Image (cartoon, rainbow, N blue to C red; front, side, top):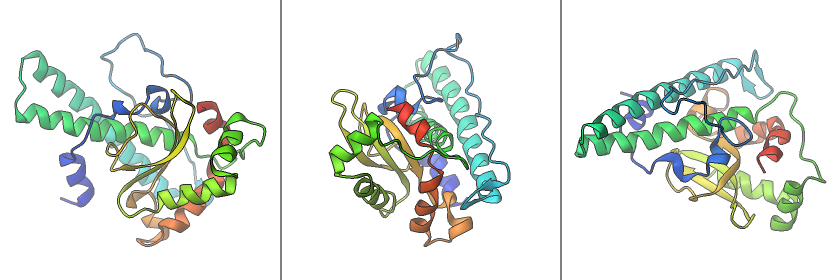
Length: 230
């Protein structure tokens, strides 16, 4: 069993609902009820064709396959956990299902946020948009924010770099999500996330190429999507 499979099976952590629903919804706006609250989640049909500038076709194809795995495991865990709860079970086996659900569900949603924000024809940040103004007011300039965000993305460990908004105050902050579901800022709205697990970059950049990968992602960030989340 490789490291990724082991983590997917045994990872512990809080359920991914700790991140604000608007920030983790399947689209750039609030997620709407489908009419069937027990319906399975469906993998979103992201299509990057022959790849993106700086991110190869094979790397993205493997990454999308991993994402689909999170979706299928989320569906299975939701069913197993609910079935156990309906039977009144609450022992260690059920507790482990809940821990695994936090990992898989958060992995599913974070990948959706990440892939949704990537484009080969990405729009740059709008200097007149309130988000850009808030970034400048917080960090002094867009470049200063990016330097801090890149430093977050290149922290030692496996996880995600994120730009968050606190809906209660409007405050922006950079954050590091360990694995998918740990060290989250409860209630925060994710505006931008970058996957920095090894599978996101090793095929194209090698084990020590995370910083180069983050640089490659920068021009692929579609700020129309990010600004809509704000």
